[in-house]
Image: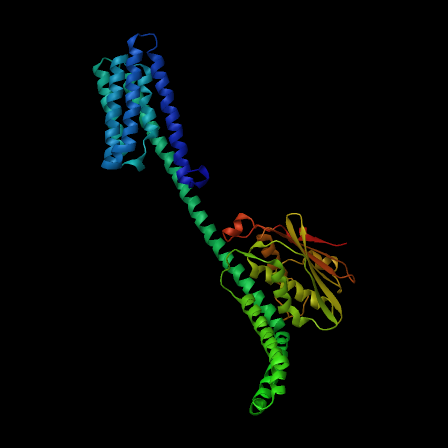
Length: 442
């Protein structure tokens, strides 16, 4: 497991264990150095230390898993006590032996066994008793016993402080995660509300787009009902229906089905998975939805280059495009043109939505992507369209920029990566840069 995958408490425990091993190794080196020059005593001390290491490793890997942590710690302290007694007797109780007592106090962990302080007290009492019986002056055991107690109290206080800080941090992380989830839910609601707002603006035109083909479909079906009695005796009438009337009727139904399918897909509110999609096809679908905002004097042109497929959430991309097309249609007034182009720009895809409309001044450009900022009349929009579009494009690892000048039209430019950033796979949005960074004026 990498350090990045560890929780804060696990990382703290790992660091503690590493430092404990370094401390134990340092005391072992000091223990061996104390016996340097005393013949076989060095070999005996090394043998005892190696036996302690093997014993503790065996205890961690095998015995504790079978007898439990509390009982395992008692076995550990008993074995280490025996090792200290052997080295103390062998080396005549040098200073290096007594340093093990405060060291054990500092690594005593109440979380590894209940009443661990009793195990430490057992170690101190047995070592003190053996040393006194061997003739060690009373001041040495008493002094190190007191130091051991002080080290134990300080270590437990520090451990309690660290654990409290870790718990507080974990609680803060949980609160931040909850806040993040709530913000994600609010964002999704804002996206959905903006979709519905766009559909509201388009509703009259969409009804007209559907009504046109349905009117002649209805008319053709009425003619068919009227002509049914004559079809069996009029080959010319049958041929007219086969060649002209029925194909036109089917074409009208296909247009209606296409519009309804685009609307259903656009308005869906369920979470969208990452899929491979054709950006040009999303632009065509967005154009079919927004087409009702254009007339003979307000033209929508598509100039689409051949592009590789992208990976992302196509419904969100379509929402951005519909919003830009609606805004452009409103900007050009009664006459004008909106041109949507695509191009392959190195490893990125560039989409431009250019209109011949009224353009925007510097004050409007400055606040363009701010939530709830709108230049429309009350009730004509929530002011979330461009803010939502900005967030969607940024989440896909792209950028959205705008160039505009009063009287000279506006051009929005989207730059998309073929493959989204890793955070999109996790359902997270990239941190937004300040929107003003994406606004320029010629």
